[in-house]
Length: 223
Length: 212
Image (tube, rainbow over all chains, first blue to last red; front, side, top):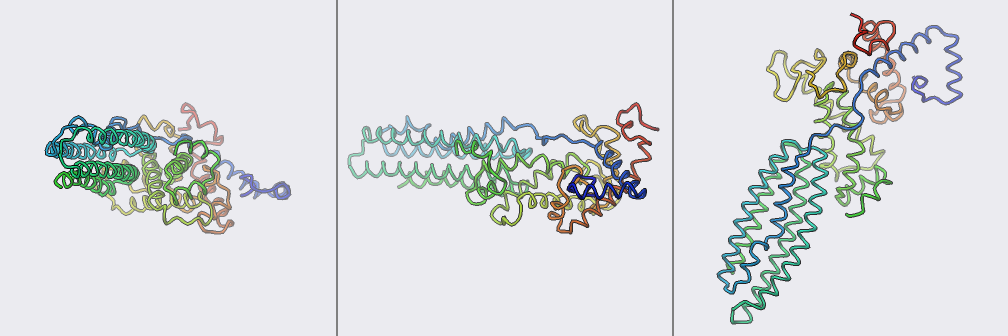
């Protein structure tokens, strides 16, 4: 059999060939094997793996959502320059609502992914998450600095202690956002790979994560 | 992360798997998937006789690979581990189909609906272009009729080009046993396929010349 599939070395081949020359029975058998091999060749499959079409809309949507989460302060930037602590608190509440909406929409996007979790979608998703995250982190950092500068200039809280508390609060929120974004990215990657049953679990985790980040905002704005 | 992909072309499977395991390196994982997707999909397709199942099962293999990355032990070749996983997944599917009693309603996600031994060709859609010749269907049917432990050897040696020694490692049996199963399998296939194809096998590849 090694002979048929080219696995025997030269001396072995010579020996076998010599045997075949003299043995009709073995010759017939080899002939059968070769014929069977030829028949097998009739069943061809594509060389490249067949990949399902990319879930472009769902993937893009997921990314947009990532950006919104990462740039949580973007929407409230204008509002954060307002001078009243109470107004800041309101702005944070609005942001929380926004994030809950995003979580809902992420879930829908994950549902869509579940329907056709293809490897190429996974690869593209990974690439795009990576880019999106980098952009989000960079933007979030820049915004935080801007925000804190603005705030320091315009906040009307009389006591220095209040000012410092607010600044510290913003910084802490931002770093938490960054951390959650990292977690979120990891979760999203995991989700994209898991099988159907696991999608449900991962989804629940994501919802909890989104809710938790919303809850953080809520808690801090009440201090 | 950036620029890592360019260094991956020289990466061995074992090195890539090491990175996946120790640092969750998604680029390394992607490299492995791209490299092995085709062969794994083909093995699963040929073992189950269905292109669609082959795709689904291959997805399952890579999902498992990722899910179990922490438990992976780098003993022996990565490919041996992967082939084994693909076979297990294929056998599970074959067992699942067999367990369904005759006359039961057709499964929503099973196209054929027949018990595997009788089931020969899944309903062909225009997209199954590669297997869409009668000759291919006969081969598919003949292989499906062959018991699994002969079928697997033939699929690995003849279609995926693994050496007998490699097959022996994957299956955990002696090389001699692999060869004798191969011999038996080819002989069976020959007796099933030869009469249908006529004395000269090549002739039957084009539809007009099929012997009726």
